[in-house]
Image (cartoon, rainbow, N blue to C red; front, side, top):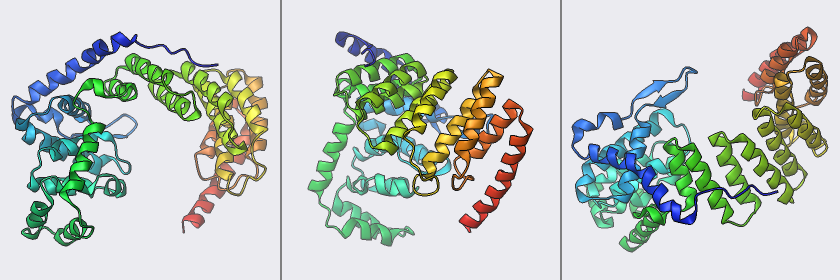
Length: 387
């Protein structure tokens, strides 16, 4: 079964793009009035009720960066430098790994101005983490000209002077290669809104909090792609992140139908379906899927597939905790307990937290006592493994 390709009619996409761009364009015009309007775009760390670190300026900064992608002007250099500085601070303070298009877009917008002195900004962005070191391209530093970059670094007393010189001179980088890279970045970040794919627009809409528009863009994108497992996985993950769990369940069923994956991957696909069903409130369907998953799980619980077993047992226990019928919950706890036995490294993946929550929900003191004993043993094992 395939998910209906709901979305905008083809002639409706330009109008919808324009609607989504109204607020970012207003934000950009406000930012262009001068630096006194920029505090809202600055990095400002805060904490959620759960204690998670967030940046209060992130959404406003993303909005202005996106509008700048489609409206680039020479007089915006000071603004885009500020935005790159704030993105770099955000990554340095809050993002321990990964590299998203927010930082690379800000870097590209600065790089397009081709100022050799901006190489210090780019070097700072590149050296935030392991992922930025790999993903933030060295050619950001060279867009003012390779020779100009070399001269700028040689004339400096920057503490990383030697490292930078090694990087920009060792491989005989050329202005032609840098220009080719810039052309690739222009294709990645087109100046015409119509030049971006429906998938990109789905992500833009999600960033603006436009869940329904994002769903329609992504569904329409998938409708125009081959109905492969990769396409369906992209669609399912996006629907899941947006909170459209019923639609995500339907797409995951289609993933399973088209997949010819080996048993371990088949188990993972079924486990994903069960997780989506549980989160959508369908504990009966989720348990039925997990029973099907058990039939394709590997025999070995302590080898390379121990992680898969931990996630499987954890999902079973999470379903137990969400099961409203007491008798059904007790039966499912007994089955889940059997699945849990013999799995290696129970201190990983939160499986014992799920076990304790399930035992408390069912009101089984013997199971609760046993899981607390396992928790203590797992803590000791964790210390030994890390040591």
